[in-house]
Amino acid sequence: MEFFSHKTNINFMGARKWTAILSAILFIASMTSIIVNGLNFGLDFTGGTEFQVVYKQAADLPQIRQSLQTANFPQAVVQAYGSTHNVLIRVGVHKGLSQQQLANQIMAALPGAKLLSVEYIGPQVGKELATNGALALLVALIGTAIYIALRFEYRFAVSASLALIHDPVLILGVFSYLHMEFNLIALASVLTVIGYSLNDTIVVFDRVRENFRKVRKATAEEVVNMSVNQTLSRTIMTSFLTLLAVVSLYLFGGQVVHGFALAMIIGIVIGTYSSIYVAGALAVAMGLSKKDLMPTPKVELDDRP
Image: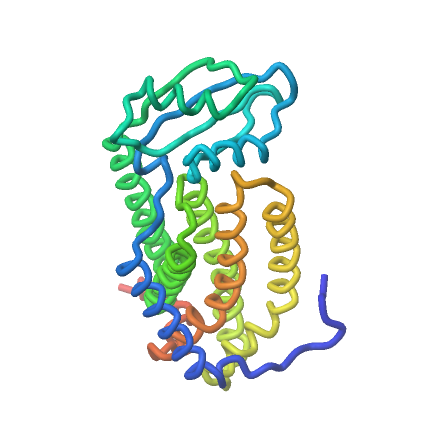
């Protein structure tokens, strides 16, 4: 299915120097924000206390959040679970309060609620989750580099890996700059973005390899331009429809999924950009040529005595 009624002929690689400068500025700004401001880790990583309460009537989640904010629990995470009557509340570590005192203050802020259970999540568990999350990102990047090197060529593997590092760093930079909570749901969205961006990159790389074998006299820059233009319709359709879904999730999905949806929105835009201007442009800059992608000729052995 074609998105455009005519073939596009946009000189994407002609702007690669300017986009390289833009990417470098955004990457440095994101790293600076992460180093200076850090990430606002959620309770999944920092630890805290989890309360399960139940209401006789359907719970009003916005009102519960407002009541907890008034009671000096502005960072409390409130979500429904099981049914509309059951509510899960998570608050951070409060060193000046015992677990019983904390439970009393929470319940005092929620008239009509009945406490079902209290569970303490220690900071050590949060550190383990943070370590495992970082390890998951690292394994995803290494696995991606190996896969692309085996399927295509090492220049593609290096450029794709750098593009995949570029994408999550920019997402984390936005979370750091806006001081948004970064929890396991947000981490899941970052891993999802890596897969999404990789899919776009492989589609372009596959077309580049095919065009190198078809168009014998074209330069590497011309072949990459041609390949990006040929896959542009598919890229726009996929990105637009996915973006439509996650924007709807951000607007109507509730506070719990805001982090996930925002990371996906940023990731779709950046991933589409990086598959063209980071991965493709880097492969050209690293000296990609036709001989690197041409199949190795078979050598026939002479069986004569």
